[in-house]
Image (tube, rainbow, N blue to C red; front, side):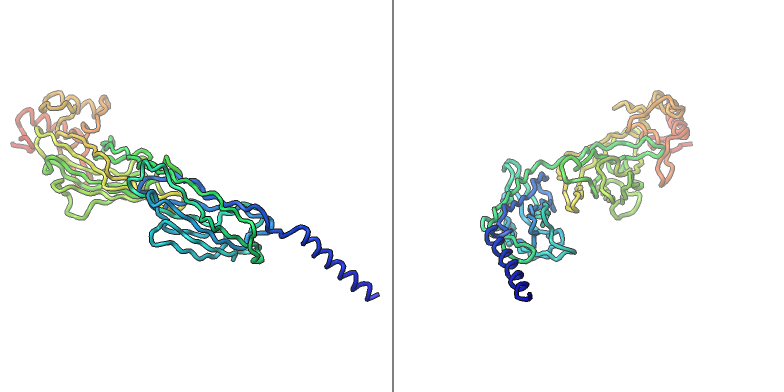
Length: 385
């Protein structure tokens, strides 16, 4: 009886081996790999393209992938291995190639019968790359090499599909500077979705703006307030600073913002009523964060924006001296019959200075303009009697 059991057991083993020989290696399947297409900003950093592998039922135990990139358009700065694989990554000094090797070290069995993102390529795009028609991140023809979960190497591996990097112009922020129509006068910095239109960028996280004036001693900066979740600070210095050498406003925000109001710069006009003064804001820089934690830099070389103020010119009629129409306009504003333009509110509020919190348009400003017309104040609205 024992002899028959041994013979039966041997027969079963021979049958299994025979079936394996007939069926051939289970790993002889058509692997496929893909690097995702990517649209990025010219000169941006930390852009990410995922490397996906179609895994057969035998499971992906390891891989060895070579990647190349067109140096005229982008440079590979890092490769991050995902999905529970440990890795060895080598990036050439020229930044055009990357070699990544990974083996399964995650919880449970290696992934099977699915598409797995095994790595992410991190790259920086090159300035002045527009017109290059994009660039390919491709697989080295000798690679990739895959291994099933038990370490057996694949015997049929295609080269896979590289991606095309489409490089687009940096978007310009809407650099119009708007005056707040709140009771506290100031210059409001606003942008319109600076980096939200091109995936995977999702919003702005920091900005630097500089303010200058053509008659710098006629404008004081009292302070700055962050808006819409932004924090904002002025560059170090004594307050209130004049705009003689420019005032820099720096802002930051977490999480990223896709647009809107950034900050309110509180100013006060201190010059004579007959001197129009132009205040200009220029972008010194803006950056954002994408959904993968990378950084996008918005080109700061965009046209500045400016507003022209004239202390006491409540109705903002360009080139006109202070007259009774400004007094009438100010009074109508105070009773809700006028809706001032951006410049008008600061022109009116700055007649009488109300302190570090900012100038507020009030009956005192209208009264002081009336006193000027009656020759009771000088050109700076100082009482003379």
